[in-house]
Image 1 (cartoon, helix red, strand yellow):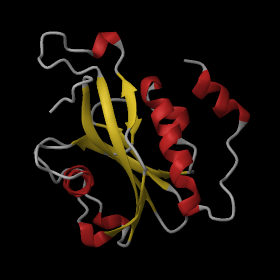
Image 2 (cartoon, helix red, strand yellow):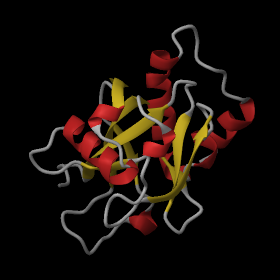
Image 3 (cartoon, helix red, strand yellow):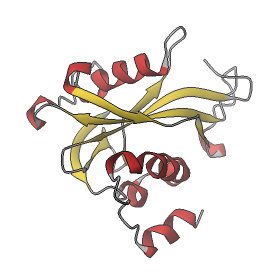
Image 4 (cartoon, helix red, strand yellow):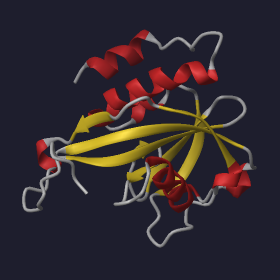
Length: 174
């Protein structure tokens, strides 16, 4: 399902623990790290897609998390030209994502990365709030920054942790 502008509807999932650390997953067979995410199927709401992707990619059910919030609008990123599949129609030039912030209500041992037939992640760890901006692939960095900035007040009502100057420069290089 691609919209009229060429963007595929998608959900992004930021999972936190009670210390406000974030789940950070390594893609299978790669040295690439990201948050869980996935496409929204036809006739599926963003929330339904989020819970489906959560179970497929992390092995958690809706009973094991609580939704703290979601982004107000779609956040978009464009794919680099080398990743655009020009032979596929309709042409997908990027993704538009609704981001969800979840807090786990279960144990770490409940996470299961191989609950689906095609696992997305082969390893995960907890990281500090702004850490993902250093490691996510460059073309997703601005969307990650926007999602984290918008959702931060839900975790840090007394003030968001300061992003280091080095991280800010890395984020804005590209």
